[in-house]
Image (cartoon, rainbow, N blue to C red; front, top):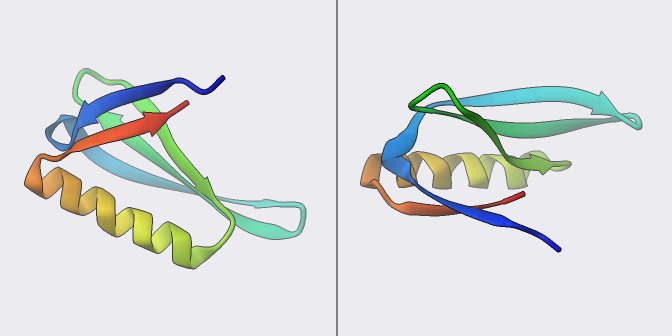
Amino acid sequence: MSQARKINGSEIVNFITDFAQRQGQIRYRILLHLYGGETLIFADFGRYEQYKKAWARLHEAKNEEMDLLIRR
């Protein structure tokens, strides 16, 4: 069963991308650093195009103070 957490874009201090090579492919993991010192894994991507779209949506959510649903 998947759990989800709702945060507001205004809670985000910084976006962090962790690049790693797994099984011969580059993986892109987006981490969110929140006010209060907490760091959450937002998502893990195998394709750059998916990662780039998610990154753009996150910046929009932060700038517009939109709500985000993060699956754990």
